[in-house]
Structures are given as C-alpha cells and as structure tokens.
Image 1: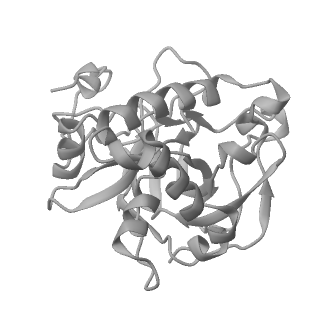
Image 2: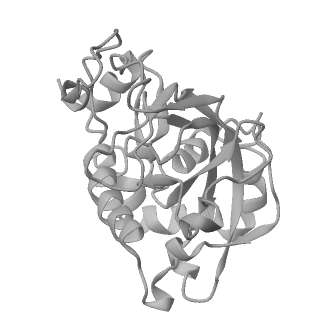
Length: 273
C-alpha cells in the first residue's frame, strides 16, 4: 500500500531545476525524454488541453498549487511489473546487465471528487517525475550507498529517474506508466526498490526549491545474483510488449531462463525482438 506524504521534500542533487544551472546527466535525459515521449504519445489527446490558449488557462486552473493536497489523496501508484532477479555488475560498466524484468509502475487517478475531465488532465500532466532508490529486503534501510571502503559509491546504477508514459495496458485500459528499464545493481543480495512520485510545476520552479511527495511504494523482494549463479532472463511480459508498441522506451526480451554452461556470456539476454 502506497504511503502518502503531505510534507515537502528537498529535491536530491540529481534533480536540481534550472535555477541552479547545474542539471546533471540524469535530469538532462529526463527533460529530453519527457518532450519526446509526451509529444509522441499524447499529441492527439492533448491537442486542446496543452496547445490552445483556452486549454492552457483551464489546465493551469485545474493543476494549480491549491489542488496539490487533493492530488496527494487521489494518486495511488501500483507496481504493475515486479523486478524478479538481477545479475550483479560489480564496479565497472563493461558488462553491466539490467534488472529483470524491468519494473513498471502505474499511476492511478481515482479521486471521488474529480470529474472525468479533471481525471484525464491529471493523468496526462507531463511534469510528474518518479525517482528510484534501492533498500534492504526489510524495506526499512536505504541501501543506495556502498560502505566506506567503497568510497560511498552508489549501489544502484542506470537511469534512476522516470518520466510518465500515457497509453493502454495489456487489457486495453488507459493508464500512466513509469518504466525503469535501465537499472543495475553492483552487489549480490536481497533488496527492494522504492519509487517516489513528485509533481513539478514549471511555472513555480523559479521561486520554489521544494515540491511535494505525492506518494511512494516499494517493490517485492528481488534477488541479485553473481554472474555464475544468475538463472537467466525471462521473456518480456504482455504489458511491456503493449507499451513498446505504443512508443514507450522499454526493451523487449526473448528470454533465456534455463541452465547455461559456466562461463557462457549469455549476450542474447539483451537483444530486442
């Protein structure tokens, strides 16, 4: 069950907005991906809401700061695709492999006081940002940083910030999805992933350094194996394939979950269909 917060949080250094003029690589990729994904997937549906003067005024009224508290109580998120296993990648990028299957988180807008028009506007709001962090198997301790002897390097590698994709799921139900297809873990062990959703208001970014946490959720426990013990990758789910068909940036795997000879590199793991 997602735990709601009403307090504001300080954005991590990796999320600093342009007032600092210090966008890191993650945020730069997020902004570029956000523009491409939202234009491609929402161009038709948002033609009025986000391109006409009347639509922009209407959207701004609906998504003003006064509605943030309401949003915090109407935006549950669910992990639609749980991570199952991963192969530890150590401390180099040469042989980095991603978590399998890639986590997919869905945002649901189900507020009883929302009209259908408001629900659809919240669903398509382009400036949601979701952050991913790694926790121990109990879900009580942040395991993002390695011990002192590893110079506090990050345990979780890859793209830790996700942007929204609006499309139909494998049951043809419209939803807002966050796909994390580029996550890798350095060390073996049992972990959980934590996803935190915030809502950025570009119109207020120049005067605010805090944005509210709308909701957060943790995954089930998944296991990170050594290269010799990794059981192989599973074939992509029908949900991942459906989102890919609509333009979502997510890799599709054929799967090779079987016993492999020791030393086999299994490079077919990472091939797209």
